Length: 313
Length: 249
Figure (cartoon, each protein chain N blue to C red):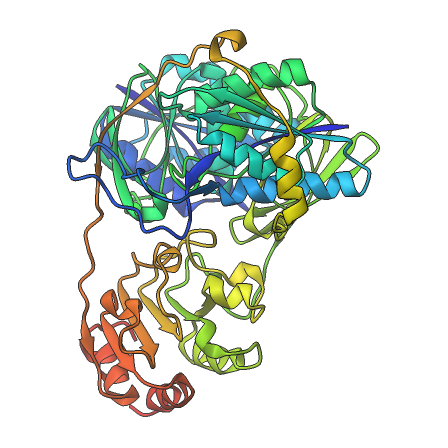
């Protein structure tokens, strides 16, 4: 078996998610190569070559590749597929955009967002926003997978590896897509995805201005702020706060649901959190059935008390 | 300009799904079905383009059993001009759907194809990208905002931690994310009008596409259940337990 991982990097640093894909590749087993595409990406290639356990690093370096754009990247990756048993990439925004394109060009079915590896051709993934788990077998001789980074540990990085660096033969094709700009949001609070603590509010907050109460709690905890769909639909907060099946799926260390009853669609977005706290005045709210710690109380009294309790040791 | 929108029939997002006891799948009998929410957003965006006189015709496509006719009626009530149903009872995987859509794009010749970024049942997030690759079209996934002008489309996409803006020549493919718009409700007169429209039927054989599955689902199981924990007596008790018991603060 031989596996090719498509690497991602930001500002001359290997993305942590690529190391998670490497860990997944090590679980599959076999020779592991890494492909890196870009413009002036030789330094990244050297970093990758230093990671133990990599056989060779394949580099496509060309001005056309300066931005990761799925149409032209796919045309370079696809011809490589013939030489491998597996093509892997982390299920990042770009991984999700690129890999299905590669799969279609190779006439291979892709397995998205793999969370566990059963055997070299059998994989586990979530469906219905994590409300069910599918065990899927690939029937293609080439397996194309995207890996959910949070489901795998990061492989050991380091610089003791001595992988060969090889230039990839390819015909440069100009991208059809033009990148105008990228804006990475710099919120005072952490991003919902990736935050260690998330504080979310629901319809129980009653109106938009009451969300400031949650902001105080979130800031005290260094937490990201989320909301249920009900709160978004009621216009309390913008749509990008939404945690749930149709919003963001989060799995923080601590999730604090305030005034959220626990509709299925919301639970789908947060039930993989390590510890769940629910604050709600309705003792029968479904959220309490999945909460590790439930506080049956009026949130307008409980949240200020929570903030006070955080101040005292 | 013609816009083709693919719409999938899925279990309604408000339904608590039940995994069948034999692990063969998810219970769909007597379960409320709806248009995939992301596809509904894709359709709404097409309708808004027609309202701005950018689009002239919207064609909605759905593939699957007879239930898809209901989904297509909804699409017509929401503003699609025409609807095409590809009837098939076997499971269709994203690559097969992409190939069928490719065949339809060849005959319909739209300048834009819109899809939802993913279906909320299989959560694959593949079909749009696969179709774009088969057509050799540019793509923008997870659209948050889009503007069409003089043969080009500018799309702001949701990416990890922020937004990305790209410009593409037409024809192009866009997949819709949640924040692109808030879909309208179908009005009663439009629902009545939609009932009178015909839905074209296009057999898989007519499209001459290989729909052989590439993946086999071995088992569908329930994820490990969370147990209800303890009720704490007040906020101080809660903070104390989070600090010393759960050790997350």
